[in-house]
Amino acid sequence: MTTTIRVSTETRNTLNSLAKKKGISMQDAAREAVETYRRQQLLETANTAYAKLRANPKASKDFDDETKLWDTTLADGLDEQ
Image (cartoon, rainbow, N blue to C red; front, top):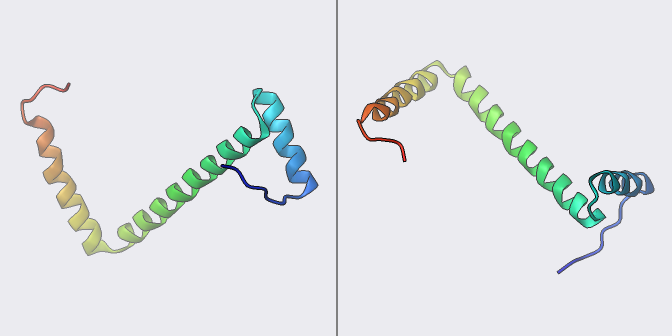
C-alpha cells in the first residue's frame, strides 16, 4: 500500500539524487531516510534519559548496583552459544 505526500522541490531533488547514487527507487530511499531518522530519534531519547539518570546520584548508584549484579551472570560457567 502506498500514499502520496507533498514535499518541497528541494527535498524531492535531494531524495532523487540519493536514490540514484544508491541505485534504488525514490520510495526505497525515502523509507531508508525515515528509518535512519527514527533510529536517531530513539538514540537521542535514550541518551536524554541516561543523562537524566546520571544527574540523580541515588538513581545512578542504584542503576550501577543493579548492573553489577547482572554482570555476575556472565561468570555462570555456561558456554556462549
